[in-house]
Image (tube, rainbow over all chains, first blue to last red; front, side):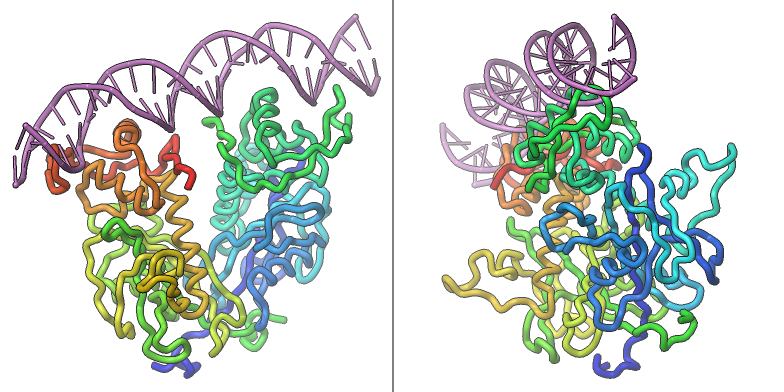
Length: 254
Length: 254
DNA sequence: GCAAAAGTGTTTTGTATACACCCATGC
DNA sequence: GCATGGGTGTATACAAAACACTTTTGC
C-alpha cells in the first residue's frame, strides 16, 4: 500500500470546534450558537467549522473565533495571555465514527479564555449566538423553570464543553491563565472573583491577596488604582510574565 | 455551502502516531521504527498509521500499538492502568499543512506508558523497531561518539515525542500513572526508580516511601515480598484504585 | 457615621525536607 | 562480617488556613 495512492486511505473531513469561556456576572459562561440546519437543527452547539485546505489547525480556530466574536486570538505557541488577545490552546480531538450522522468528521477542539468585554456577534453561518452559564448548558445548574433540563448540545458537544471546562478549572491552579479572563488591568479582588466563579467556591480574600502578590512575576502593579468595585481604592495590576504558578493555587474541596 | 456536498470541504488523511514510553535500565525510552520508504527513508520515526474508515481514534491507536509491540492497551476511557495492559491516552493533534510533503495529513498523537517487559516486534510496515533513550532520540544526551548528534526524527516527530515526554513527566506528579511503567507487582524502590528515571533526578528513598505508602488508595500491599533488588526483602504492591495523587509528588528543581 | 472592599499581621496546623538510625537479606 | 537496599523516627522549615484588625473610599 503506497501512501501516494489516494484510494489507499479513507478521506476525512476535519473541523475545529471552539470552547470559548468567559466569566459574566460571577458565572463561568461559554459561547453557544444555534444551529440553523440539520442535523440537530434548532439545537445549541459550539461554534466551529471546516479547516481549510492550506490552513493550520490553530489558524482555523483563530479564524472561527474572529468570525464568531471579533476576538483576536494570540499565537498559541506564544508566551500566553497578553493585552487585548484571548488565550487559545488546543483541547483534544474527537473522532468517533458516528459523531456526525452525515459523514466521517474528526474535530480538533480548541479552548479559548476571554475577558468579559465582547458581545456575541452573529457572523458566518451562526444564526444566533449567546453566552450561557456552563452549568445551564450542561444541565447541572438551575435552568429556567425548576427541574427543567435543557436539551443536550448538538453532536458530542456536551462532552467537548465538559472537557474544556475541566481543563480550564485545573489549569488555573498551576498557571497564570486566570488573568486571561480579566481585562488588561484588573484588581486582586477581580482576579479572585474569577477563581471563585470558575471553581464555584469561596476563597479567603486575605490569603488570596497574599498568595498572588507574593508570587514573583505573576502580577505587576501599574501604579493606578480604581474604586469600580466600591470600598477602598484597589491597586491595578497587569499580568506578569510568569506563566507557571509555583506553588499552585489550591482549589478547596467542593 | 451545504455540508452534504463532498466538494464543499477539503479531504484530509488522518493518522495516529504513538509515543510509547517505557523505563529500561534506569532510562526513559521511546519506541522508534525505521522508515523503509520515502519520505524520510531510513530515518527513525514514531510508530503510527492511517485511521480506518470506521474506526475510532483510540481504537486505531490501540491497533497500531498491538501491531508494533504486541501490547494490549486499556480502554482509555477506563479507570487507568490495570494489570497486563498499557496506559493509553490521547496526546495532541498535529496538522501543519506542510508536515507531510506528500499530502495533507492530520495526525492524532497518542501517549502509551508500558512496563519494561516487551521486546519490540517488527510488525506491519515497521521494518525494524527499537527502544531508544528519549534524550538520545532528541539529541539531548550522550549519543554514540562525543558531540555527535542523531538525525532528527522523521516529519514533526521530534516535537511530538518531546510533547509526549513532557506530558508523562508532568502527569506522574499528580496521578498514579508512574505505576503504568511497573510490572503488575512492584516494590516501593522500583516505583521510586521510575520517578527518578523519568525526571532525571534523585529522590530521598525514605521520604518517597512515606509519601507513597501514606497516600490512601495509591498502593495496596499484595502480602508478598521480594529480594530481586538485593538487600532486605521489600514488600510487593499493586496499583491501587486511586488515580489522582493529592497532594502531588513534588518534582525537585533540576 | 456606616457599609463595603482593600490590605496587613499573627497564630496554628499540616506537609516536605534532611538526616540519624535500625532491619533483613545475600555473599 | 559486610554491603545493599528496605523501612521508621524526628527535628526543622515553609506554606496554607483561619481570623483579628486597620485603611480608604462612597453614600
